[in-house]
Amino acid sequence: MIDKIHGVYYLICDICEDESEAIGFLEFDEAVEYKKDNGWQSERDWISDEWIDICPDCQEQ
Ligand SMILES: [Zn+2]
Image (tube, rainbow, N blue to C red):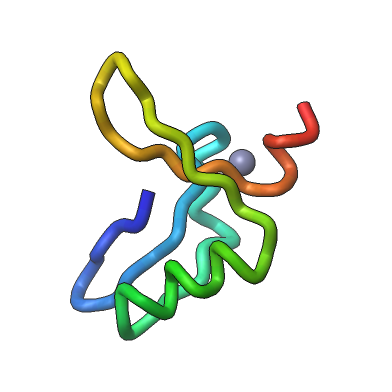
């Protein structure tokens, strides 16, 4: 997910939800760019009908 906290967007993996290494972005689009460039995967969760973001580490498991 991309979470907005105090005006800053954070990219957080929906599997491990590791916030300790989350990077802050000033623009939503920057976070989306980062996802593409760093091998993150976006998948539709059909149960909650929301997009989930998966970090490279969790994709390997
Ligand atoms: Zn993860």
